Amino acid sequence: MARLPDLLTGEVDLLERRLAEATPPPGEFARIGNDLWWYRIALNFPPNEVNVWAFGPPDDITLIDTGFNLPNVHDGLARFISALPGPVRRVFVTHHHADHIGNAGWLSRNYGLPVYMGRLEWMMARVEQLATFEAQIANLRRFFASCAVPEEFMQVIETQRRPMYHTSSDLPLNYHPVQNRERFSTGAAEWEIREYGGHSPAQHLYWNAQGRILFGSDHVLPRIAPFVGIHPDEPDADPVADYLDSLADLRGLPAETLVLPCHGLPFRVLHDRLGRLSWHHEYRISKAEAACRDQPVSAFAVAKRVINRPIDKVSVWAAVRNVQAYLNNLCNRQRIRSIRQQDGTLAYIAA
Image 1 (cartoon, rainbow, N blue to C red):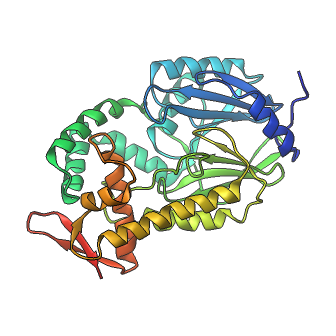
Image 2 (cartoon, rainbow, N blue to C red; image 1 turned 90 degrees about the horizontal axis):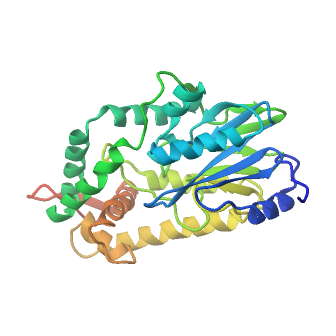
Protein backbone atom coordinates (compact mmCIF):
# COMPACT_ATOMS: atom_id res chain seq x y z
CA MET A 1 0.00 0.00 0.00
CA ALA A 2 1.21 3.52 -0.76
CA ARG A 3 2.14 5.70 2.18
CA LEU A 4 -0.92 6.93 4.02
CA PRO A 5 -1.07 10.69 4.53
CA ASP A 6 -1.45 12.28 7.92
CA LEU A 7 -4.53 14.43 8.34
CA LEU A 8 -2.79 17.44 9.81
CA THR A 9 0.59 17.73 8.08
CA GLY A 10 -0.72 20.01 5.34
CA GLU A 11 -0.32 17.25 2.72
CA VAL A 12 -3.62 18.15 1.09
CA ASP A 13 -2.43 17.00 -2.36
CA LEU A 14 -1.59 13.54 -1.06
CA LEU A 15 -4.71 13.37 1.07
CA GLU A 16 -6.90 14.41 -1.85
CA ARG A 17 -5.39 11.68 -4.06
CA ARG A 18 -5.89 9.12 -1.33
CA LEU A 19 -9.53 10.14 -0.93
CA ALA A 20 -10.07 9.63 -4.67
CA GLU A 21 -8.26 6.28 -4.75
CA ALA A 22 -9.86 4.82 -1.62
CA THR A 23 -13.42 6.17 -1.89
CA PRO A 24 -15.57 3.43 -0.32
CA PRO A 25 -18.72 2.30 -2.14
CA PRO A 26 -22.01 3.28 -0.47
CA GLY A 27 -22.57 1.09 2.56
CA GLU A 28 -18.84 0.54 3.18
CA PHE A 29 -15.98 2.31 4.91
CA ALA A 30 -12.30 2.92 4.27
CA ARG A 31 -9.16 4.09 5.98
CA ILE A 32 -8.12 7.26 4.17
CA GLY A 33 -5.13 8.38 6.20
CA ASN A 34 -3.21 7.51 9.33
CA ASP A 35 -5.84 9.36 11.35
CA LEU A 36 -8.90 9.60 9.05
CA TRP A 37 -11.65 7.05 8.30
CA TRP A 38 -14.70 7.45 6.08
CA TYR A 39 -18.00 5.53 6.31
CA ARG A 40 -20.56 6.10 3.53
CA ILE A 41 -23.99 5.12 4.83
CA ALA A 42 -26.21 3.98 1.96
CA LEU A 43 -29.89 4.99 1.94
CA ASN A 44 -32.75 3.92 -0.32
CA PHE A 45 -34.23 7.43 -0.34
CA PRO A 46 -32.80 10.94 -0.82
CA PRO A 47 -30.13 12.05 -0.01
CA ASN A 48 -29.07 8.45 -0.88
CA GLU A 49 -25.98 8.50 1.32
CA VAL A 50 -24.64 10.12 4.48
CA ASN A 51 -20.96 10.36 5.40
CA VAL A 52 -19.76 9.60 8.91
CA TRP A 53 -16.16 10.63 9.56
CA ALA A 54 -13.80 9.35 12.24
CA PHE A 55 -10.53 11.13 12.93
CA GLY A 56 -7.76 11.42 15.49
CA PRO A 57 -4.94 9.27 16.88
CA PRO A 58 -5.77 5.63 17.78
CA ASP A 59 -6.21 6.45 21.47
CA ASP A 60 -8.42 9.54 20.92
CA ILE A 61 -10.84 8.99 18.01
CA THR A 62 -13.77 11.34 17.36
CA LEU A 63 -16.89 10.62 15.27
CA ILE A 64 -18.66 13.31 13.28
CA ASP A 65 -22.41 12.68 12.84
CA THR A 66 -24.33 9.45 13.19
CA GLY A 67 -26.79 8.76 10.33
CA PHE A 68 -30.47 7.89 10.43
CA ASN A 69 -31.85 5.71 13.22
CA LEU A 70 -32.37 2.59 11.08
CA PRO A 71 -31.39 -1.06 11.83
CA ASN A 72 -29.04 -1.35 8.85
CA VAL A 73 -27.29 1.84 9.92
CA HIS A 74 -26.84 0.44 13.45
CA ASP A 75 -25.18 -2.64 11.97
CA GLY A 76 -22.94 -0.54 9.75
CA LEU A 77 -21.90 1.79 12.57
CA ALA A 78 -21.07 -1.20 14.77
CA ARG A 79 -18.86 -2.67 12.02
CA PHE A 80 -17.23 0.70 11.43
CA ILE A 81 -16.44 1.29 15.10
CA SER A 82 -15.06 -2.23 15.57
CA ALA A 83 -12.74 -1.73 12.56
CA LEU A 84 -11.15 1.43 13.96
CA PRO A 85 -7.67 1.03 15.47
CA GLY A 86 -8.71 2.29 18.89
CA PRO A 87 -11.64 3.40 21.01
CA VAL A 88 -14.00 6.19 19.99
CA ARG A 89 -13.99 8.80 22.74
CA ARG A 90 -16.75 11.18 21.66
CA VAL A 91 -19.33 12.10 19.02
CA PHE A 92 -19.74 15.58 17.54
CA VAL A 93 -23.13 16.23 15.94
CA THR A 94 -23.22 19.04 13.39
CA HIS A 95 -26.95 19.80 13.51
CA HIS A 96 -30.36 18.48 14.49
CA HIS A 97 -31.53 16.88 11.22
CA ALA A 98 -32.30 13.18 11.58
CA ASP A 99 -29.59 11.98 9.16
CA HIS A 100 -27.00 13.59 11.44
CA ILE A 101 -28.32 13.25 14.99
CA GLY A 102 -30.35 10.10 14.34
CA ASN A 103 -28.11 7.64 16.22
CA ALA A 104 -26.66 9.95 18.86
CA GLY A 105 -28.79 8.34 21.56
CA TRP A 106 -28.06 4.83 20.28
CA LEU A 107 -24.31 5.47 20.32
CA SER A 108 -24.49 7.04 23.77
CA ARG A 109 -26.41 4.09 25.26
CA ASN A 110 -24.52 1.29 23.50
CA TYR A 111 -20.99 2.69 23.57
CA GLY A 112 -21.12 5.18 26.43
CA LEU A 113 -20.07 8.00 24.11
CA PRO A 114 -20.50 11.63 25.16
CA VAL A 115 -22.30 13.78 22.60
CA TYR A 116 -21.06 17.30 21.75
CA MET A 117 -23.41 19.69 19.97
CA GLY A 118 -24.53 23.31 19.76
CA ARG A 119 -27.23 24.24 22.28
CA LEU A 120 -29.74 25.63 19.75
CA GLU A 121 -29.51 22.56 17.52
CA TRP A 122 -29.84 20.28 20.55
CA MET A 123 -32.97 22.10 21.72
CA MET A 124 -34.51 21.92 18.25
CA ALA A 125 -33.90 18.17 18.19
CA ARG A 126 -35.49 17.86 21.62
CA VAL A 127 -38.54 19.91 20.65
CA GLU A 128 -39.07 17.89 17.48
CA GLN A 129 -38.80 14.65 19.42
CA LEU A 130 -41.32 15.74 22.04
CA ALA A 131 -43.90 16.83 19.45
CA THR A 132 -46.33 14.13 18.35
CA PHE A 133 -46.58 13.30 14.68
CA GLU A 134 -50.15 14.63 14.67
CA ALA A 135 -49.00 17.97 16.11
CA GLN A 136 -46.22 18.23 13.54
CA ILE A 137 -48.61 17.51 10.67
CA ALA A 138 -51.12 20.07 11.96
CA ASN A 139 -48.35 22.68 11.99
CA LEU A 140 -47.26 21.67 8.48
CA ARG A 141 -50.82 22.00 7.24
CA ARG A 142 -51.13 25.52 8.64
CA PHE A 143 -47.87 26.56 7.04
CA PHE A 144 -48.55 25.07 3.61
CA ALA A 145 -52.12 26.36 3.64
CA SER A 146 -50.75 29.90 4.08
CA CYS A 147 -48.58 29.22 1.00
CA ALA A 148 -51.70 28.18 -1.02
CA VAL A 149 -50.50 24.59 -1.50
CA PRO A 150 -53.43 22.50 -2.78
CA GLU A 151 -54.96 19.95 -0.41
CA GLU A 152 -54.12 16.97 -2.61
CA PHE A 153 -50.45 17.88 -2.25
CA MET A 154 -50.81 18.00 1.54
CA GLN A 155 -52.15 14.46 1.66
CA VAL A 156 -49.00 13.20 -0.10
CA ILE A 157 -46.76 15.24 2.22
CA GLU A 158 -48.41 13.65 5.25
CA THR A 159 -47.86 10.16 3.82
CA GLN A 160 -44.23 10.96 3.01
CA ARG A 161 -43.37 12.42 6.40
CA ARG A 162 -44.79 9.62 8.56
CA PRO A 163 -41.88 7.17 8.01
CA MET A 164 -39.41 9.96 8.84
CA TYR A 165 -40.93 10.51 12.28
CA HIS A 166 -38.90 7.69 13.85
CA THR A 167 -35.56 8.24 12.09
CA SER A 168 -33.98 9.76 15.22
CA SER A 169 -33.41 7.56 18.26
CA ASP A 170 -34.23 8.85 21.72
CA LEU A 171 -31.67 11.50 22.57
CA PRO A 172 -29.26 10.85 25.44
CA LEU A 173 -30.33 12.43 28.72
CA ASN A 174 -27.39 14.81 28.67
CA TYR A 175 -24.96 16.31 26.21
CA HIS A 176 -21.98 18.68 26.14
CA PRO A 177 -22.80 22.09 24.61
CA VAL A 178 -20.20 23.67 22.34
CA GLN A 179 -20.33 27.05 20.64
CA ASN A 180 -19.08 29.15 17.76
CA ARG A 181 -15.27 29.66 17.62
CA GLU A 182 -14.73 27.23 20.50
CA ARG A 183 -11.64 25.05 20.05
CA PHE A 184 -11.15 21.40 20.89
CA SER A 185 -8.24 18.99 20.50
CA THR A 186 -7.82 15.40 19.38
CA GLY A 187 -4.30 14.28 20.10
CA ALA A 188 -2.02 17.11 19.00
CA ALA A 189 -4.55 18.58 16.56
CA GLU A 190 -6.63 21.65 17.35
CA TRP A 191 -9.99 22.26 15.70
CA GLU A 192 -12.16 25.34 15.63
CA ILE A 193 -15.96 25.21 15.55
CA ARG A 194 -17.58 27.44 12.93
CA GLU A 195 -21.31 28.02 13.50
CA TYR A 196 -23.47 29.06 10.55
CA GLY A 197 -27.17 29.47 9.84
CA GLY A 198 -28.97 28.70 6.60
CA HIS A 199 -29.43 24.98 6.07
CA SER A 200 -30.05 24.69 9.80
CA PRO A 201 -30.24 27.53 12.35
CA ALA A 202 -26.81 26.96 13.93
CA GLN A 203 -24.97 24.19 12.09
CA HIS A 204 -21.41 23.40 13.14
CA LEU A 205 -18.44 22.97 10.83
CA TYR A 206 -14.98 21.98 12.09
CA TRP A 207 -11.85 23.73 10.79
CA ASN A 208 -8.20 22.81 11.21
CA ALA A 209 -5.84 25.52 9.99
CA GLN A 210 -2.70 23.38 10.20
CA GLY A 211 -4.01 20.69 7.86
CA ARG A 212 -6.27 23.05 5.86
CA ILE A 213 -9.16 20.64 6.46
CA LEU A 214 -12.83 21.60 6.84
CA PHE A 215 -15.47 19.13 7.92
CA GLY A 216 -18.21 20.88 5.97
CA SER A 217 -21.32 19.02 7.15
CA ASP A 218 -24.31 19.96 4.93
CA HIS A 219 -23.28 23.59 4.62
CA VAL A 220 -21.02 23.37 1.57
CA LEU A 221 -21.69 20.36 -0.66
CA PRO A 222 -19.81 19.36 -3.83
CA ARG A 223 -22.62 18.92 -6.37
CA ILE A 224 -25.95 20.13 -5.01
CA ALA A 225 -26.93 23.33 -3.26
CA PRO A 226 -27.67 22.62 0.41
CA PHE A 227 -31.35 23.05 1.15
CA VAL A 228 -32.14 26.47 2.58
CA GLY A 229 -35.80 26.82 3.45
CA ILE A 230 -38.39 27.74 6.03
CA HIS A 231 -39.12 25.45 8.94
CA PRO A 232 -42.84 25.62 9.77
CA ASP A 233 -41.93 26.37 13.40
CA GLU A 234 -40.33 29.66 12.24
CA PRO A 235 -42.47 30.88 9.32
CA ASP A 236 -40.98 34.40 9.35
CA ALA A 237 -37.29 33.41 9.54
CA ASP A 238 -34.71 34.58 6.99
CA PRO A 239 -32.27 31.66 6.58
CA VAL A 240 -31.19 32.95 3.16
CA ALA A 241 -29.57 36.03 4.72
CA ASP A 242 -27.81 33.80 7.24
CA TYR A 243 -26.58 31.48 4.52
CA LEU A 244 -25.28 34.21 2.21
CA ASP A 245 -23.46 35.83 5.15
CA SER A 246 -21.86 32.49 5.98
CA LEU A 247 -20.57 32.02 2.44
CA ALA A 248 -18.86 35.40 2.66
CA ASP A 249 -17.26 34.42 5.97
CA LEU A 250 -16.01 31.09 4.62
CA ARG A 251 -14.13 32.93 1.87
CA GLY A 252 -11.66 33.80 4.59
CA LEU A 253 -10.42 30.18 4.54
CA PRO A 254 -7.64 29.23 2.10
CA ALA A 255 -8.73 28.47 -1.46
CA GLU A 256 -6.95 25.09 -1.33
CA THR A 257 -8.95 23.95 1.73
CA LEU A 258 -9.99 20.30 1.51
CA VAL A 259 -13.69 19.98 2.35
CA LEU A 260 -14.99 16.72 3.83
CA PRO A 261 -18.80 16.95 3.47
CA CYS A 262 -21.55 14.87 5.03
CA HIS A 263 -23.13 14.15 1.61
CA GLY A 264 -21.19 13.48 -1.57
CA LEU A 265 -17.47 13.27 -2.21
CA PRO A 266 -14.67 15.43 -0.75
CA PHE A 267 -13.55 18.40 -2.83
CA ARG A 268 -10.91 21.11 -2.89
CA VAL A 269 -12.37 24.02 -4.86
CA LEU A 270 -13.85 25.83 -1.88
CA HIS A 271 -13.85 29.38 -3.22
CA ASP A 272 -15.28 28.32 -6.57
CA ARG A 273 -18.01 26.37 -4.81
CA LEU A 274 -18.83 29.30 -2.52
CA GLY A 275 -19.20 31.54 -5.57
CA ARG A 276 -21.50 29.09 -7.33
CA LEU A 277 -23.70 28.67 -4.24
CA SER A 278 -23.96 32.42 -3.78
CA TRP A 279 -24.90 32.89 -7.44
CA HIS A 280 -27.52 30.10 -7.20
CA HIS A 281 -29.39 31.84 -4.38
CA GLU A 282 -29.02 35.37 -5.73
CA TYR A 283 -30.42 34.17 -9.07
CA ARG A 284 -33.40 32.52 -7.43
CA ILE A 285 -34.04 35.60 -5.29
CA SER A 286 -34.17 37.71 -8.46
CA LYS A 287 -36.63 35.28 -10.06
CA ALA A 288 -38.83 35.34 -6.97
CA GLU A 289 -38.85 39.13 -6.99
CA ALA A 290 -39.75 39.22 -10.67
CA ALA A 291 -42.67 36.85 -10.05
CA CYS A 292 -44.17 39.38 -7.58
CA ARG A 293 -43.85 42.40 -9.85
CA ASP A 294 -47.27 42.66 -11.49
CA GLN A 295 -49.87 41.21 -9.10
CA PRO A 296 -50.12 39.53 -5.69
CA VAL A 297 -48.99 35.88 -5.87
CA SER A 298 -48.75 33.05 -3.36
CA ALA A 299 -45.58 31.21 -2.39
CA PHE A 300 -46.84 28.17 -4.29
CA ALA A 301 -47.34 30.24 -7.43
CA VAL A 302 -43.89 31.82 -7.07
CA ALA A 303 -42.32 28.40 -6.60
CA LYS A 304 -43.69 27.26 -9.95
CA ARG A 305 -41.83 30.17 -11.58
CA VAL A 306 -38.59 29.93 -9.63
CA ILE A 307 -37.89 26.18 -9.59
CA ASN A 308 -36.50 24.90 -12.89
CA ARG A 309 -38.57 21.74 -12.97
CA PRO A 310 -42.28 20.94 -12.54
CA ILE A 311 -43.44 20.92 -8.93
CA ASP A 312 -45.16 17.65 -8.20
CA LYS A 313 -46.57 16.09 -5.05
CA VAL A 314 -43.12 14.86 -4.07
CA SER A 315 -41.00 17.95 -4.71
CA VAL A 316 -43.52 20.44 -3.27
CA TRP A 317 -42.27 19.72 0.28
CA ALA A 318 -38.87 21.27 -0.39
CA ALA A 319 -39.72 23.66 -3.23
CA VAL A 320 -42.29 25.76 -1.39
CA ARG A 321 -40.22 25.99 1.80
CA ASN A 322 -37.20 27.07 -0.24
CA VAL A 323 -39.11 29.77 -2.13
CA GLN A 324 -40.79 31.00 1.05
CA ALA A 325 -37.29 31.68 2.36
CA TYR A 326 -36.57 33.87 -0.67
CA LEU A 327 -39.84 35.73 -0.17
CA ASN A 328 -39.07 36.35 3.51
CA ASN A 329 -35.65 37.68 2.53
CA LEU A 330 -37.18 40.06 -0.01
CA CYS A 331 -39.75 41.24 2.56
CA ASN A 332 -37.01 41.93 5.11
CA ARG A 333 -35.17 44.00 2.50
CA GLN A 334 -38.44 45.82 1.69
CA ARG A 335 -38.32 44.75 -1.95
CA ILE A 336 -41.76 43.13 -1.68
CA ARG A 337 -44.57 43.06 0.88
CA SER A 338 -47.05 40.41 2.01
CA ILE A 339 -50.83 40.69 1.89
CA ARG A 340 -53.18 38.44 3.89
CA GLN A 341 -55.91 37.27 1.53
CA GLN A 342 -59.53 36.61 2.50
CA ASP A 343 -58.96 32.86 2.35
CA GLY A 344 -56.09 33.11 4.85
CA THR A 345 -53.29 32.64 2.35
CA LEU A 346 -50.38 35.06 2.02
CA ALA A 347 -49.71 36.82 -1.28
CA TYR A 348 -46.69 38.90 -2.25
CA ILE A 349 -46.39 42.02 -4.38
CA ALA A 350 -43.62 44.52 -5.14
CA ALA A 351 -43.21 47.09 -2.37
